[in-house]
Length: 396
Image 1 (cartoon, one colour):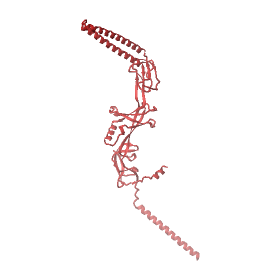
Image 2 (spheres, one colour):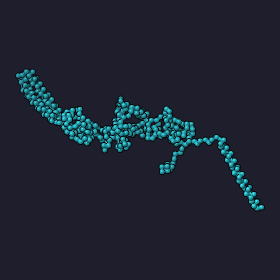
Image 3 (cartoon, one colour):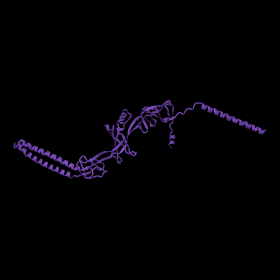
Image 4 (spheres, rainbow, N blue to C red):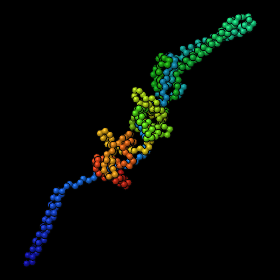
């Protein structure tokens, strides 16, 4: 009897557990049916990162391709014709103004100088004779012993002789100069180029190029900008969207062909008033120190001009600007949290940002990250900026 009673109790408990499981399965089935029949769950609101437009002063930087030139470059040419007798310098070496570079055979010019000296002596003797004759005629004319005509002839002969002396003196000066020109000197201090004419060659006065000398410290950097750039530059100045550096002279930094930055800075010292009719560009020039002779004439560099400022400029990250069919646009978040496309006008880059000239105003909220998830007229959630602690953890 006791065993029967226990079996009966166990069966009752088993039946109760099975009923509970069956009831749970029915509830789950009904819940699944309700989800299948009902509408799908709404997608989550996309999260975006934004920036708030705030005007600020930004540096204005311009970049051009430039070419190095000696601050003074002189072509050394023969000033008298003759045979090139000697080279008196080492090609590529530094020379000082007045150093002898070449010698042209001086003997013909010494002979010419001697001949001019003899001509001067003859003219001076003739003058002395004419002066004595005029002196003798004067008392005779006063005593009416000779006619007025004879006395006038004596005075004229004296004047002609004096003029001949001056001409002879000029010939002597010219001969002396020609003789000195046989020693071809460096007109400036600098670095010499190769000798163009070999020894023993005939050189022609004012025509034959002998060598060149370049002054390389400092150097000039020649660069050009377009007429359109000039007009935009002047327009920004007139509209107070750009202020020039102090004194109106831009600072200059150079990037060399290997990508390295030249360590010394310079200044812009000249801008041409003319537009080149062939290229439509305006030439400008900068002066840069070159004590180590690292910069050489003819070398190409990239020229970076700085020192100007864009006051109260609006700039946003470049990735926030989208290309529309006819214009550029950005996605903004309005006061209701909805996405609103906004056409904008851009000018130049400032680092990694676009300068905006129209389309945005202070306080506008511009989507920077998550633009592809933002749909015009749809709501978005603005992501919270990471805390300083989180940023440091991310860096590590």
